[in-house]
Length: 85
Image (tube, rainbow, N blue to C red; front, side, top):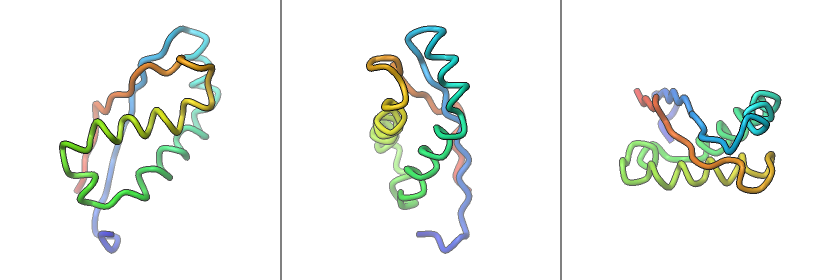
């Protein structure tokens, strides 16, 4: 919705149940990145910049990556880097 005039840089960090899930996360990294990019690419600039939406976006990220892992393996997602220019 920005006409290509905006840039989003996001670094997600996941809290995982165990080391086995961590290895699965590494094994599926390209697919996870693609799912997150697809999700965020559908968001408007307003949705991405509104601080109240951050928790909703985190929930949606968990929803799109969780099917790749055993149930309950992905506990939380954090955004230590979330920059829009």
